[in-house]
Length: 344
Image (cartoon, rainbow, N blue to C red; front, side, top):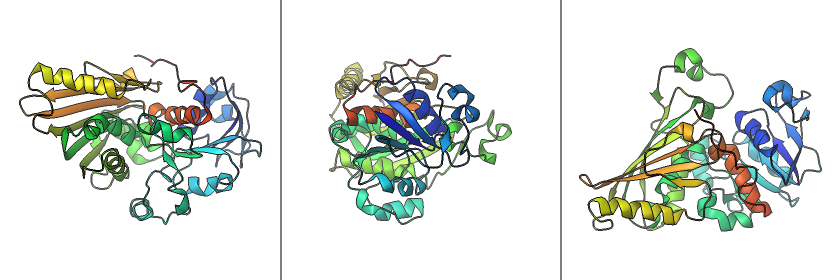
């Protein structure tokens, strides 16, 4: 299958190229990049020099599948030409994640340019929407924070085990801010430092709430989401706190056993979610498409703490995009994604 990548010169786009280069079912035939037209991809990213492609302004007309790694608004505008061509799409931006166009305008400061496509798209979290992704023409790849947070909380929300108040304390590596230069991600500012940011208005919060509400419409989840920038390149560690509804889990060690079994059962058919008996580290996911989850029941407070770890550029972006393509096209779900994490 002939694949094109729109904006292969950002972090997510270059990671897509790296992963797809080892995929047995596809050929990357065309790539774009807004500021590097005319250059070889290897001139921009030397580690991709084996991909012998020149960056162009537009994708070739012979592509059969399209990934867009452009920012929001620009992504939807660039994908319009493919909507009616029977070409399947995975959009890594936020343009098709929120189903409510008014909510999109509030959080992204634009009127959605193609609101009719919001209901046509499928939210690309395979662990929740695998069947819908199978028949989708356009998949909205989830954000990195939502991926880690929703996967951590979905079994609890689905099974009515927790109350509606949820706190998500999440840390991300600086690559999540993208490749554009900024003082906030400058080495001298970020090294040996950590900060909370967008504490009242991070754009991933409504995405998390939307999906948790969809998982169980009987719960009006109240989400407190605080993201942090950590002095590392890759990785997300999300720590989620919530309270157990009385009698849904046993007290003592039996409650912890029940909780672990609940998670293992929920994700038993999903190859990229690993349920751990101990708290994960971000480096356990580095370069892999895995999400490692550790759920813990604090019997004294009757609170559940769930810790999840992902690589924000793989399961949080490019790897999940490839996973979605595999499902959409009938390939093995793990094709191109079998690499183990890099450690240390």
